[in-house]
Length: 372
Image 1: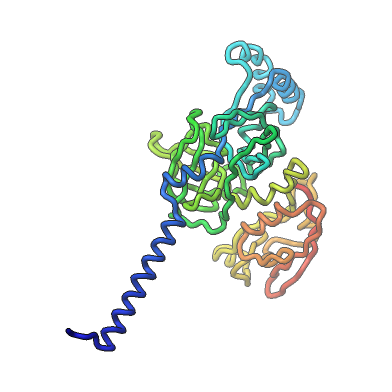
Image 2 (image 1 turned 135 degrees about the vertical axis):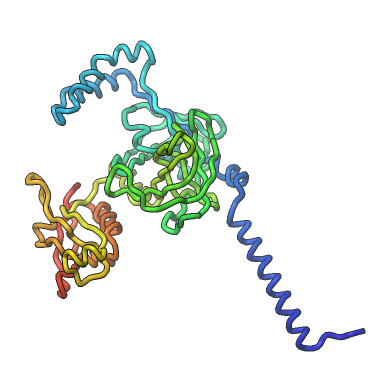
């Protein structure tokens, strides 16, 4: 019988440990990343189908207010048409209804959906996974970020299955994601894909949308975007059709952006935004050459001031074109986007010290944040 030499025994032991480690890693990865079926089973109970109804008195009041509001004047013809034809609309189609999706986030029955799903309505219902239809009340909404918080009016002893909220900061292009919503009122429709891009903008300067390749449809707005572990990392907001309806570009609000305002929605019913009255951009080689900057990172002030009727804290503090902000309060600033989000999330009335580079000098000023 042949025996192993010490060298062969060492090599054998090394490969045994390596194989065992690889198997453990593979098993851990398989437990961390769910299959689409596993993800659906885990996450579908937390998803609701939302129905938002504008009752007749509320609808008439809305159209009257729109008609009597003189600003902007360009809306007057449309507002007048909506007011005049509202009775005919009621006869033909009945009260206006909007449909969307939502995701339950706690045991008390709070759920998130899009602001645009509930914007013109005053009566809300949610269809749950077990087909219960439950009345909901609006807690508050953030029109700028397009999300809203509602609460199910649960009876005594009724329970719901909340989803786990994840961290959208760690997302990278190529990460697997899945959405569950109600396109065309088809409840709990699963769509899978990948993250196609980050920090996308659509209709405003402050959005940080997650772009995915998911195929969704009308009625999926407000539904959750899940990562491969079944955690909510976004709220589906919109889809843009591409070419001949052969595909789509889907945008979702990062869950971290939603989290920033949830406490304020619970306490105040709205999210107030900070404003400094300055236009900022990333420091780029073009700006370095144009403005003769000495900084290579930070948020460059390219314009200070606002229309005459708006107060500009930045102008009042003495900031000017070419200043590069490198610190906002205790936050180090390397790009313009984090500074913009930090300003938006600063409560109006607060004073914040900023540090900035002007030429070779590092200066500081105190900004009095006002409401946007």
